[in-house]
Image 1 (tube, rainbow, N blue to C red):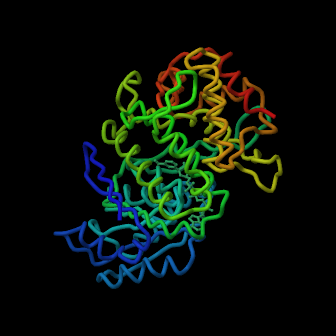
Image 2: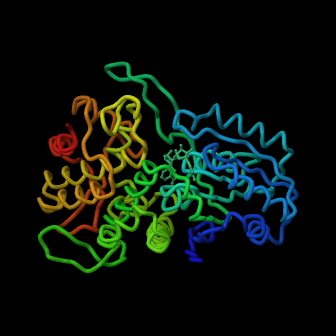
Image 3: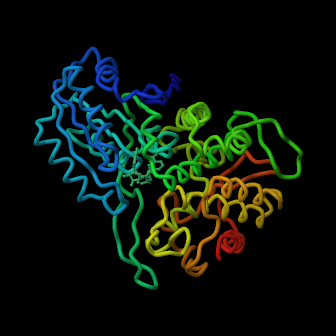
Length: 406
Ligand SMILES: NC(=O)c1ccc[n+]([C@@H]2O[C@H](COP(=O)([O-])OP(=O)(O)OC[C@H]3O[C@@H](n4cnc5c(N)ncnc54)[C@H](O)[C@@H]3O)[C@@H](O)[C@H]2O)c1
């Protein structure tokens, strides 16, 4: 088992990574709650997680002495809503859940964000145990304490439906995170690949955080950092081989832990980077994620894009934007593109609206401060270092969008 400690200004906890951890959920929860004892536990689970996993979780909680109530959640961005939050809170309240009793979030990032926010707000905060079951939630969403829901709205020239992503939420650090790698066995390929986009993102900031390495560009650096390791391990990762997969999760959680450890609430001034660096590719990505009619292959039945797919496209757009603004080498975007392609993710989109409309959607991103769009962009000539940049020339942003337009 690997264990990555997370230490923030408000909490210390561990991310445990192994196969079979869900069978030990009850025992580990009791251990982490001690000296407090909880009579009840509330299990919020993703309805696509196999029944055997949900039963293993509730069985383990019962064996550890908890009365277990549960609610199944249908994980869509539309459902990551105030309405679903209300439904979940009512179910928690009806189970007579008390102040120090845990909510268990068993599912991907949607369930983790929603159940985490329910735990943050119910009785002004009850403990939450995050049990991520997607690659994306293991390497990213379950770590760092961000929880929340989307707001829905109608807007835009074409009157297209947009979602205000993650606009309402709270910081609520988990008691412990159990990344049971065996839960990924049932994860559909498209979602698995979406998780790889966040790993590529981490590889693009890791060297700047002191994790070593860096590659590509014109400098000739080729020491093996996270980005290179991910690229060279891609074949094994796509086959979901146990050893590289556990290593991928461990290395990525370590990057996320380092970032949230220095800047829990994303408060550091932008020139110091901090948590804002995790938004690499996200301001572009969020803009396209709000457009519900886009799909990775142009086929409506595959719309909308998944979060990780939008991030993958966002990483490419950000790299081209940085190259156009002469912040990074001209060859860096090609290296990023080949990583995104290698992960089997889309690199271009059909049906993107005008550059003006996309810029407007980007300016709705909640990361906008004082009306100023701040972008995280690759910096220098090697992959692994990024910085936060304000007032990027709209032409450079347009060049980023052009690079991902079919
Ligand atoms: N809180 C954070 O710091 C943070 C960070 C990154 C992303 N997020 C959020 O995470 C969400 C995306 O999370 P995600 O990529 O995990 O997607 P998701 O939660 O939508 O899950 C993807 C799909 O896989 C299904 N699923 C989950 N686990 C499964 C399993 N083991 N077997 C079979 N099917 C399974 C789900 O039902 C869903 O259909 C977004 O809402 C994003 O905003 C939050």
